[in-house]
Image (tube, rainbow, N blue to C red):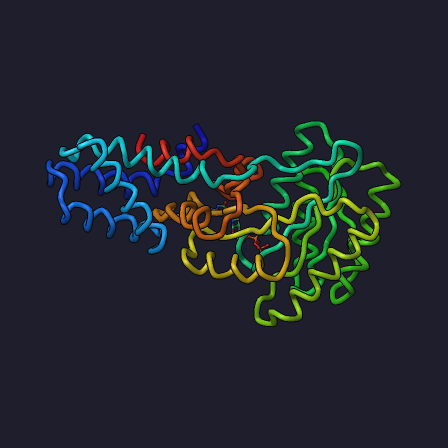
Length: 301
Ligand code: GDP
């Protein structure tokens, strides 16, 4: 289905390389592992993660006495999948069972934050929930208008102030309106100008404080949006946000646009944060809950 189609670039590149390698070598040896290492690094799995993976594979090959590359292929799938699920955490969104759920969405400009908020709003609407959006990126020109376009597409209301106003005030207003209208979900957009890291992180903290002051359990999720096509850069961005604020999960966008879907493994392995959704296209339907088994089998199937 969608999951499989969205990963077609990664699958074609990755599985054809692995299959080719398996055929070329037949017997498992040190050179085989070295070439496999290169393929994985080329797929953006990340050096640390690859080292760990290769070690695990060698262990498995040794303990199970696997000599043929064809037999090892199964083990590669197993180990990849095990690596994703073992550190998975909770991939489901944490929802507030007795009241409004507040979701804060953070990330650098251009990663697909606005699009993802639109997709999420639509998803909740489809589930029969009432949704509101807060236009918390008051900094980037056009951000408010763009969020309104997505609000219309998803048929949800957007609370906004003018460009340049205080994002915390927008979010405060949005919480007040969402409470009085008894909304089920409030999704808050935030600025993504990483050029001024310190100011941005202060701004995010202020927004978060306002939310928590109004609703002690909120925000229920702080979702960091990352662009899969930016590879190791995405990983670096994630570390900056994770160290500055309590990120609770990752949404990885544009996986349809890259052959380097291995970045999912690097994120799981090096950040210890669950990937909760993946973006597989520009349309409103193109957001999928992350499923590690479907992901790994999607790489080979
Ligand atoms: P923002 O600056 O982070 O708010 O980014 P936008 O939401 O404006 O998205 C930037 C670009 O990425 C737009 O052209 C989107 O259509 C595109 N985009 C967002 N998510 C995806 C995705 O999952 N797949 C693809 N192919 N494009 C995406």
